[in-house]
Image (cartoon, rainbow, N blue to C red; front, side, top):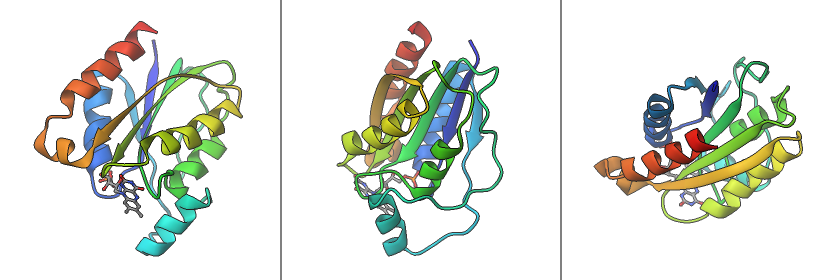
Length: 157
Ligand SMILES: Cc1cc2nc3c(=O)[nH]c(=O)nc-3n(C[C@H](O)[C@H](O)[C@H](O)COP(=O)(O)O)c2cc1C
């Protein structure tokens, strides 16, 4: 099964999660990179209003990919505008399954997952599972149990 893990990370926590997950799944790992950064208020406002911000060229075509996993930080109970931009650019996903994992300070995971879910279901993709990690657990390393359980569910699908 060809699995692609696509992630965005500003401070490195989601990156740590995505790298661990991709290793467990033997998956392709792709990073969403912004064209330019903006201030904290802009980050939160753009996330809140589900706006899109430009990202560097990235593989968006899912031809040959069986399963997509999106890993994103929670920003303002949503996902970063760079993630919205990626989700909007995805092609070739109709009928394919996807999973979502979000990384947060402590609240807003379900609404963030819902944003990703809505965007990919709009493309005809099929939501299968989701998980959340918390910043302090990623810092301490105790997040691995969550990742292992999530990865096992993805493999079983
Ligand atoms: C603009 C902004 C908004 C955020 N909003 C939330 C939030 O609504 N809920 C939450 O639990 N954490 C929130 N956070 C914290 C991040 O989700 C958390 O620090 C996460 O670990 C960041 O992942 P990263 O290190 O991959 O960038 C926010 C962080 C930023 C920068």
